[in-house]
Image (tube, rainbow, N blue to C red; front, side):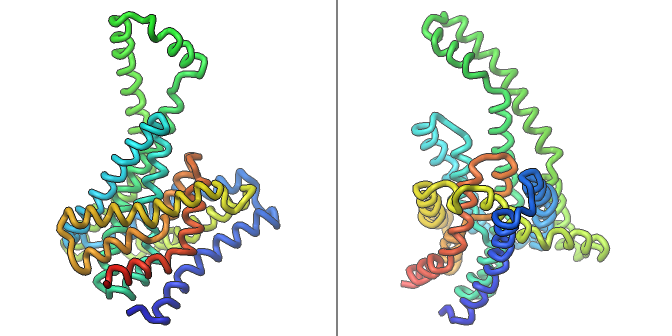
Length: 354
């Protein structure tokens, strides 16, 4: 049973996030303390320093030898299923636009578990549930955020190498007149372009700090929990001094972005409702199917469902802002999600208890 004290601890965890967001909003909307370039610089600092170091800290403190394979399998299957479904829908309705697939995955399957989820799941299912939740956070940092960066880079690079509108119109106008042999030659000519895109994306990912931080975090976790070693204090403190404020700085960046928009709900009511539905209905539904498929039962099944119903993660917003890919939708998802997450999580908790 979740007590009032437990709920207070959840509110206690959420309030600092909103404090950072509100202060940032006031500093731009009313006080005009930051220019648009400075706001972009703050977001870049979060994306290139705070989040990679936070990912290193999260991954390196988790024991990779004691991961729950059923939960890990369900999480991986959920993400893959979401990607497939969103790709099909995007192909049908949006002519295969990758940007909507990226946004949909961010909304439906990447919860903000680090601050809100730990106290909430601990109150619901005990300390063991908090440990299971930490494993989901590790998977997000190690696998899914890097995959998200890959998709962001791929989308940005495809726009860079896209043909100008005039060339596209010309190709469409003469498409029926092109002989079969010439069409096959054109198909072959596209292969070097695809190779160039992949090489460009690969180079960008190699120099991305998040790639190095997550890999280093996993390697150190394997060493640490295999031989019981600890980082030297001077190294540990150097990392923690920047990573500890990662979520706060991300929420600050969110507030700066919201202040630059005409409305707090920047994407509009219709897209906001869709974002909430994807996060709190589609995400848990996909996780329920995947948990059953992987044999998760009892407390493990309940933890998997409730964590999938946690609010939209702040990290995808930071990436979306960095790549200018629907940050309005993701910012709305974070802001509204944190407000309604606790009652929705409690609804799932009591529903699963029936």
